Image (cartoon, rainbow over all chains, first blue to last red):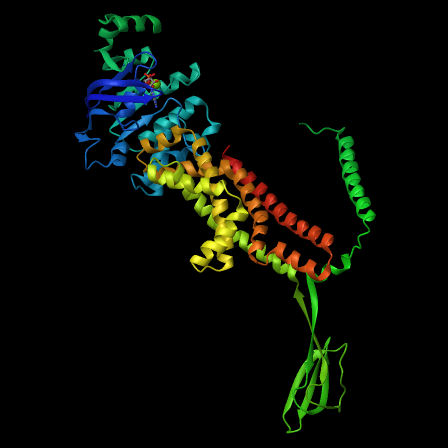
Length: 244
Length: 319
Ligand SMILES: Nc1ncnc2c1ncn2[C@@H]1O[C@H](COP(=O)(O)OP(=O)(O)O)[C@@H](O)[C@H]1O
Ligand SMILES: [Mg+2]
């Protein structure tokens, strides 16, 4: 489904060269849920942003369903529509209503007509549990509701994969659960997901595989049981001690 | 600051200061014994023109038929050709049976005409409007060029903006007219409007650029992550948010443009300012004319400010 091979991203600025992502390889099967954890600044965001080329990587390849993102004939906009992304700060479009947030890209990118896209939008709002907010502006919603709208917006494109970059980190604690529930539901339905999160409970419950990153590199990979009970690497052990 | 009940004091103080300034000015003017001739001004807004109606042949008046303020005079020439002329009743010069010679005045037609101040006002308005339309267009695209990652496009936009912002508008108008106008054989209106549009366009571009850059970059990322192309993301997501934000500085810029347009009078475009100058040469009512001209600019700019105020209120719904 998604095949990242030796992906490297280098930032240069103010005289320093940062290898934010340093030769990361990852194969994700259809329906698999991969959770990425690691300390702040370890390159988790940068890595998953490479998977839809929001960040253009300097080395390596990323194949989505066999199509090279940097391929000569690849239509990047088409590929991005196949890869849904949910951001830490929601990034809803504040000048559009909730429903318009869900329909815009369907119409522009998927070329669906108004009624099709509205129907799809309403169906997804029902799925994430806030059908009554369709005509509100995002600023009127709570953080948890906004993030659920953001998930619905990504799902409206019928993506093959969903990427989540710390989707609950900007939320008040009492709203974390409602967002995680939506994500668990998605996982249960067989969505392929890569999730950067500090929610260890979610990782334990939902992840098929946990990846631990530090300083741009994948330090340890394993099943949740293996990872949480018996981590091999010292850095992973230290990190777990801090977060658990 | 909160305006409370006791603000009546501050209102009175404001009024007192304004009256004081007006009185002081009035006193100073009295000292230099300037003769005010306000009565000469209205005719430059609107005036009545009288046009003498003359008979074009020798003949007789065969009849008069009055309808309201006008009278139709029936005439018969010596070669028995009938015709008629309509004139105002008040100062009709002929009566039935009169014998007239070619060129005799039968009466007058009065018409209401707009004076030079109104023509000047109109010129100022349309020149500003056309220049604004072009400036918006130029400013939008230059602003987009300034946020482009393409070095050449970005560089071209920067050079244009720097050149315009680093030189006086008056000099730009001279260059547009005496240099570009001569080389490319352009009319003074084209030069004047072009100079104003390029001037306001450069400032608009900076406003547009800052507006776009003020939008959180997560907006562009979210749009692109959904598969929208760069132009689609700009048009649907970034620009609508940016434009709402930049409406206040943008409208300030275009209100300024109306005032700046007075500089085109130096290349002999008869706008409001030039009309004022021309009237002064025939009336010597210098003080009155400039005060009136200033008031007319003030009226245009206040109307525009009000308009912007209502637009801002209507745009603020999604906040
Ligand atoms: N746009 C950027 N420019 C320069 N450095 C960046 C940029 N984005 C991230 N970095 C650097 O790359 C490293 C990894 O960042 P990030 O991927 O955000 O880490 P994480 O998501 O794991 O906290 C950090 O050292 C960060 O400072
Ligand atoms: Mg991050």
